[in-house]
Length: 322
Image (cartoon, rainbow, N blue to C red):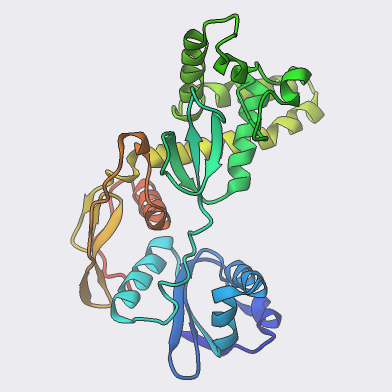
């Protein structure tokens, strides 16, 4: 483990820290305070420092930290394994008081209730839930993109109708909730239900391919400015599709080898530095409307394991994770 003094001006040392995956720990002069794993130690510490300036428990941790320790790794799985094995044997004061996933959010769909689409912190209501997602801003971009392309609802106010209906950027689905609507509410909202599920729940909905084809057309016709405008939209939809593909298998991802065991998307056994580790496993109870939603605390681990198996094509070599 590398170790440096964690002074009040630790930000002056950020640029000296290595890039890539790492296990890290913050320590006082007497004991470890908190540990974690990250794809970018510099950015993680900058984020924690920003949260510390807001006060609260992160400020407590930051003010007590005297040393920073870290171990760099080539892969996300190696850093995750180190973290899980370490925390099984070490009980740090702030380990379970600071939750790095607390700001993750879910996408909620409901074709017969306003708002039809929303970003929520929990899965307690009568919506179809997807997620969690690490970034609310990313979810907002996805909602805005589908609203512009398909004129699906992107309700931003607590009441309806809003100015989007007047501007013609929305089909006014909210008006179908009114009994006085000229159109049968049941028929119209059932259509909305199909559109929402096709756009947000089915990864292979064809929208990404249409945008990609349109960009190629612009490029071939030497309309480079128009082609460039579609790049960000293609990137957003591509990332959303990747995340959906992950959510579809996350809760049923199983794998077994001599060096590790994965059960329902979590690491339950591994070999690390010559020792065997077993981790407690409990199957959460999910409701029917949480079919593409899982608990926030499972997300990061599940994403790492999912991508590891994708990269190795389910052909992981048996090895001792050092």
